[in-house]
Length: 91
Image 1 (tube, rainbow, N blue to C red):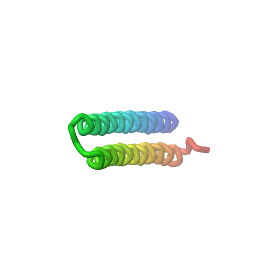
Image 2: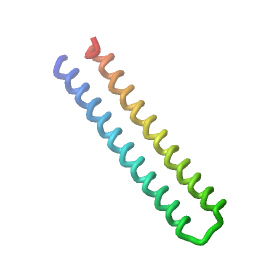
Image 3: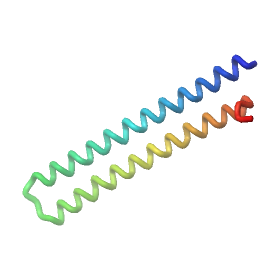
Image 4: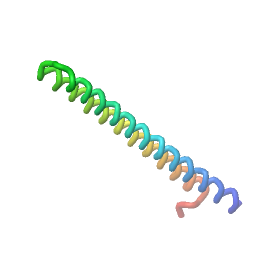
């Protein structure tokens, strides 16, 4: 039983780590894309209002993806805690 419990706990921790890494990568990519889009628009001859809107849109996109990443990490942590509770590792 102990071997099964340890294996499940390890797998849950591994899944959490993978989810965190994927979320972090996704956040970085979205941030880079948003920044690139903002810089691209700023490089064009556009009105200040359009540049402000593009910058705001880029910032909103970045914040939205960061929020989604935080939710993924939170759910992964919840899964780990659930496995620990189910196997008695949290006692």
